[in-house]
Image (cartoon, rainbow over all chains, first blue to last red; front, side, top):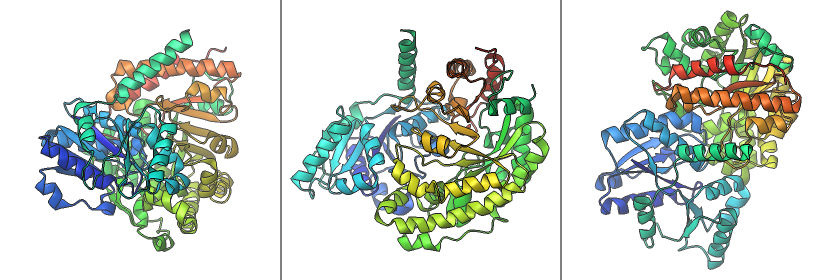
Length: 223
Length: 361
């Protein structure tokens, strides 16, 4: 089962993006489940869920990955057993750390007979509010950009060209290896890149990356 | 050495027979009380809560006991809705702060009721039974953690910037809640109190914001002093990836500091690095086996990881001229999950007994 996380801070347009991406992937024949955070705050459109044959679950909590990991893993295991989606799109809290969420997702392998793959981590960066976010929650924004595979510069239809350029420069300064895309969650324009990334590409597993890192450190000590 | 002798030696960096160990096994201990004991039963009944720790001590032979329940105790008693899972950690799924005015409306609950009562009374019960065997400590959520659990972390983080006075109003209520809990815990007879100051994390807050909102002088600072003045040793747990070690270890001066390690996060400090940088000079550092290994790893694997950690710690202690000031622990709570392998907890303790032996440098 593949897990796709769409990260970003509160108000960055995650829910709209998750819904649009889910709809697009369903139209491409994928069986999709979504797991969203803080449902009370954002209210999922149940008609949308029903109309698109999606399965939705809620998970709350902050960046306390070890505290919510068990419930999140249980949610994924139940989704696998009851709905068997091809892809689970996860909208984590804006204070969640992408590597922590990967670790928690892999935890579900202890609860169901499955192997977790990760789609490239997508972080939404709000081009309209970037200055304010960098003043208010700079550390969290930097962490989410640093751990992204793809940064999705959002709200480009209302942001000024200067704000978009500034956002791109910021992303490059924090994470030069991240791909930058500008799809619109409202019109769906440019989302093909995102569908392709989620369906056809993977991001490293936490377990494998830790093993590699520990080996690297072991080797460095030996040398 | 018995457990308390070993603990005391490690706390004062005296010679000890081996490193102490305490995988933070709390809710998972209920599994030793029978298959029918669910998490919600364990966390709502002081006797079952205490019996879990007593059974865990008998079965695993730990060097400490810490009365951690979960991080939704205070928020739940303040009125937030807690999703209770029979086989897992519960969590807040409906926050109660929806506007800036709501921070002002928060009120300290009656701590003689709810899960606040369960954790205080349960701590008193297990301390009575175990205090002559191991050092026992209570566990309490710090004010900023309790507020983010109650109001939602994203909301609090934004409000810190847009309307800090509202956040401070909420924090003042949490501090009063904590103050009452400290008083209650001090009457249980525990030797220490472990504070969870989770947001001391450079991935989330810089020094300036952390200092302001954890209240390193006025909130946490006052509560730390109150802890000591109430006769309990100050201990801190923080499972952050990039902990504020200078503030939480050097400034707060806890006697025990429990921390995690995230090898993939650049600059997340390993056990050896923490010792090398002097944080164990005056504080017993505890860490840092990945808690998820208790579920997912084979017993041989977690034994190997524990053995490697013992070696890393012993080498670093020698390099720093220290004798015993590190406790082999899990970086965060051992998941209280139905799938957690009790054999893996036992394997950590048994490996430390074998490979944590201190033979001098």
